[in-house]
Amino acid sequence: MLHDRDDPGLSPAPLRRRKRSRSLLGLAVGVLLVHLLVLRGPGPDAPTKPHAAAPPVALTTRSLAAPVAVPAPESSTATATAPATATATAAPRAEATRADPLTAMPQVVTARRPAATAARPTRPPRHPSPPRTPDVPGAIGVAEAPPAPAATAPARTWLAPEAEAGPPAEADGAASLQAGSEVPPVYRTLLPPAAVLRYEVRRQHARGTGEIRWQPGPGTYRLQLAASLGTLALLAQSSEGRIDAAGLAPDRFVDRRARRSAQAVNFQREAGTLAFSGPAIERPLLPGTQDRLSWMFQLAGIAAADPELVAAGRRIAMVVVGARGDASVWSLRSAGPDRIETPGGWVDAIRVVRENRSGYDSGAEVWLDPARHYLPVHATQRSARGEAEFELRLDRREPGS
Image: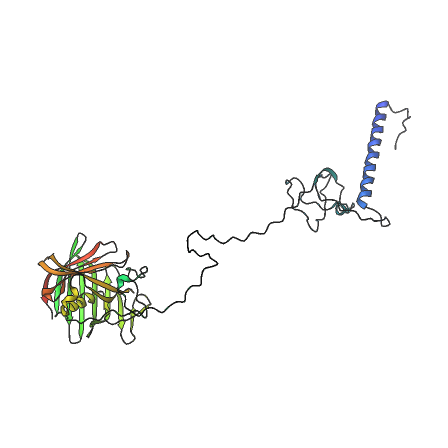
């Protein structure tokens, strides 16, 4: 119950407090009515007139009581660039005033900022310009380059290995043989008689022993090489096959190195291919092809049949294959007479060098003794860097069986 201001029972101080409370209550009721009218919007009978939509604004609000559930706008017309404390893109004011006053508390706007400027449309990337043609006489731009010429068939003329180009394709640096490769010359041979050659083996500072057993027969042959350094079996090779008009015709070559498993290559003459026990590959079998052991005795037979072929500066070409998939043309150049010391004494020999085709290619040298049917009295295998991997120096020659 409200007391009258003329009530004598009230003192002046309580009366002033009553007046202030009434004033605040009236102000609150007025503010509430204004907000209700604004939130409800115009009545259904109110005339509508077109008006320009208010520009989007960024609102910073403070809630009086509980958080307000405001429906999210259907679309955004601008990308917000204001700080995180301000709301993102605001919807037009006409949409914001439709919140239901029964389910949302009114909000008091404390600050208003202009909406963030819409981001500029991204310019499409420019197409990269073609590279400029260098200022070189005769240069052709990319767009003006002529079409590549059609591939031509390989030449059918034999080319010496030293004239061939291209990087090495094999593990030892020799270019591999491909189907259709040209055939090296076929030489006449005069093979030496059976013999057992006993050698001193050298590998850097180590010394050992080795022997080669050369056993030719009626239309067949067999070759065996064994080299060891003390109890270490350094190398064991065997080659066996036929003897035909081109000299030695290997059928099978087996190669076993220190601490490695044995590998073999089979000369399939009926099929005209080389088959390897290790890599699953095949290579063409060309006439006169030798393995990595028989080539020295084939070379001795060629030199015995025609000594002019090992005159200083002359070359002999032959295909040599290994048991690990390598097959290449070897160019053997004669360096002429060379007097060499062996454990059995000094020998006037002819030095023949296998010429390397590249910096990755291994090398070999052999000294042939004309007084002993051009049999090898000294042989050296060299690495691609030119270092001697091991050497064979003839100690003595014994008749074979």
